[in-house]
Length: 393
Length: 196
Image (cartoon, rainbow over all chains, first blue to last red; front, side):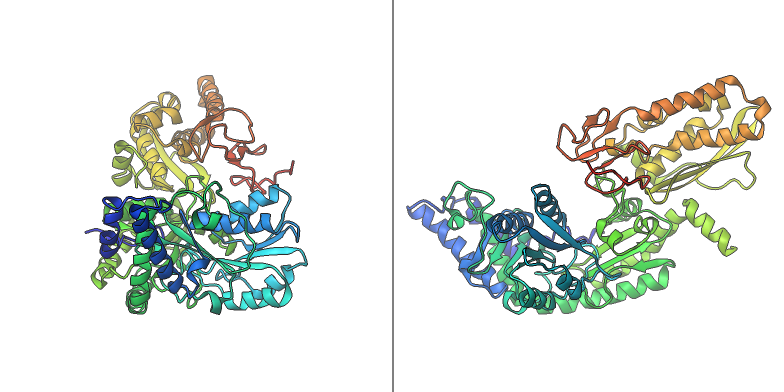
């Protein structure tokens, strides 16, 4: 049995997307900038993908910039705006639970002389719009708050935050919608954002392609220069097969999203109930309601995430964790830390992220295996032994 | 997904000597759950031989495999022999460990030595000078050989950046652990860094 519960890392490539990409990996190899018929084919597919991606988020096609990833889109938005608006101010705001592709550019800008405010979150991982209001200054040039968090699934009140920003400042508002676009209604006008990042491989598209939406009139300098691609806002030859795949994935998603979400919720809810009933001392993280539909995050006390993932993996279950040992830098998840969870609880972090392809039988299998894995690790944990002693067992 | 050798996986999946000894002659505990790894070793001693060893470990795959390997290596040995087992030897027996796990997870020999120390403390009169010197040697061994936690390149001394990948890291002045300097405090011991 092979069960994939790690869709926050990446989703599979939809078979239709794969088929759609194939010609651009073989016969249609033209450089989109070339003026001959080979170039025309590539140019045409890029522009039709641009329309599909724009429609997915209710944007105009000319406001979409294709990038190599969500990470690049975030870097471009933050560094590009910071440099373009330097004459207006040097203050930036973000939250403490962003993806590193937002936090690290912020750190870099701080080293270059910008000032950054990192907003706290409550125990569910929510940013308080009032905190945004208090942090705004005359010289604030950019606020970047993610739409939904990968580790805890919490969805931020983006519309409210946008309102606060627009009423109180001239700052641009960027949101990282990489994790949300595959599951939620992402509409740049309803959300009131100036910039928005997405990535194809989080919604059945290929890896290595993302996009940044930039509202008309938004001042932003390019990161990568030396070419006319994307009107000079992102130089370098287009990833033609990738962009073709992203467009197709966007089309499929727009058509299927509602159906998928219903299915995801019908799988997630019994999963939560099952875990609650079968394993004691488990803490669910993130917001109980305002969260991604197929996303479940928890901390299992007395055991450590990496060994949990490895045992699950030997049983054919692929999942994720935010424990110290799981990260290459051996650093506890900054997201779980920001929730105020104690460090030893964070070590037992587990993230299950479902896809519309998952079946109820897979949930049943997981619920059979999971208690076994937890018990096995707890039985060799000195912390569990201490707990049982204190409990008087 | 496994960054581990076959030997590590073998010990992780089927760890030997897991458990608790009800009335042990010595107990040794290293690490803490905040760092992600914690090991408790229990020993019984008969005529200066390690008669039984049991351990419990909270931690990653490497930590569990290390504990199991140490217990196998030390069982039936004399105390003096067991004290010569080093963390490095354990890693070698396991077919190597990822560089970034050498510091935090490779504590099995330390835990075992602590259990022996505990036993020795209880019988201080019998403690030989040899054992004392071995304990000191072990401390020296632990201080050498750091690796960048981001790219695994070997580092020496206190340098603000990994020379290989450029990550801003260094050695915490308080506890000596490799850590990141862009955080405000040491991830291991919590000591605050003074901003340069």
